[in-house]
Image 1: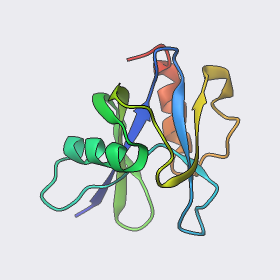
Image 2 (image 1 turned 60 degrees about the vertical axis):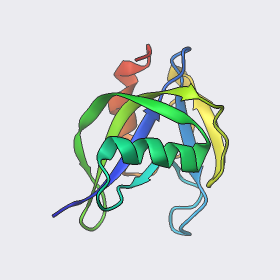
Image 3 (image 1 turned 180 degrees about the horizontal axis):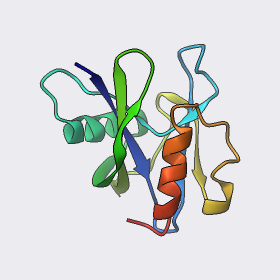
Image 4 (image 1 turned 30 degrees about the vertical axis):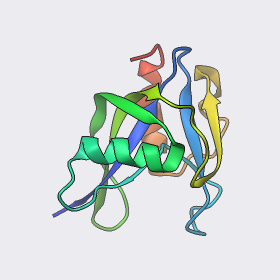
Length: 130
């Protein structure tokens, strides 16, 4: 059975996407990703998504439409991503090196991790907001 990692494609009212720069592990540090993390045993995807955003960013999000289906990761992991918007708080880099809001024309100004790159391309069509 596949292990699930959830990700949030957080959009703001100006159509910008929130990108997060990894601090660890060393082989991924410095790469950019969508915030999120592993689903804990007994936890559903949406609960995990909200929890991860609180832990990593200090914000509460509301999930919208799912972006694609199961995106493959290394090993027996898959990534599931939802469009999301912040309903409480201001994002801060609690577990990342840096956060950056990217306008549609800036989406590829950061070095996305290979697993996130096709998802960012899929999110491009939603940058008008959720």
